[in-house]
Image (cartoon, rainbow, N blue to C red; front, side):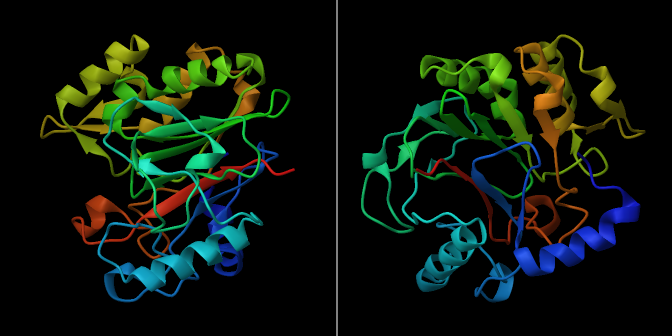
Amino acid sequence: MSISPVSWYYFYMSLEKEQVIRSEILKNKHGFSTRLGGVSEGIFESLNLGINRGDAKENVIKNYDIFFDACDILNHEFMCGNQVHGAYVHVADISEARPAYGEGNVVEADGFVTKCKNLPLVIFTADCVPVLLEDREAGVIGAIHCGWRSTAADIQKEAVNKMQSLGACVKNIHAAIGPAIDVCCFEVGAEVTEAMDKLIGDASSFYHEKENKKYMLDLRGVVRERFLQLGLKDENIEITGPCTMCHPELFWSHRYTGGQRGSQASVICMEE
């Protein structure tokens, strides 16, 4: 579900109170964060959830409490990792959960799946595409970070395969694709469009060429198309939230800020 210009005002006003964007197709507790409602200051104002961006530690810890409370998630210890724009999806165990800045090994991964209850899965974005996944019948959830490199490397297939290894059925998997940079703002070179063509066969309907020989790419559209190719049902896939670069008052955008920014987080959790 995309946000139309007509409903944008009402959408924004509701977010002023809630700080999070929710999907209409996910039943497990979840949320895509905005930058609203936190305690950070300066370039990190205000709900910065980036652990390694340079923000004050105590502010980020408080922001996580605010974010998880807004998502109605009780356990504030969670699974996250060092995202490297790859396609590795880690099968997470409850023993790996830790609070923000907590002790424990940091997994190098761009996605997580689990059957564990009370284990929030968290991924970080600031223009890239966040995706939250669930097969509520099998009791399997996932969260993946789809930058263009991860998308081209087919992290979507890796996530679906890992969910199936835990008992999920592809026809029952729901995918919520959250706020990200959109075709209006995502200018890329030919190497990116060629990678998208290789991924889905022909991605030309998801990009158009500019006079400067660059291309404007609908990355969320490519991610959605790849999930359809992998067997997810059309009605089980949702695109929600506006373009991150178009709305710097609501989101951090790496491109808009030139990298001087905080991070959004996306979380999903099964509770007892």
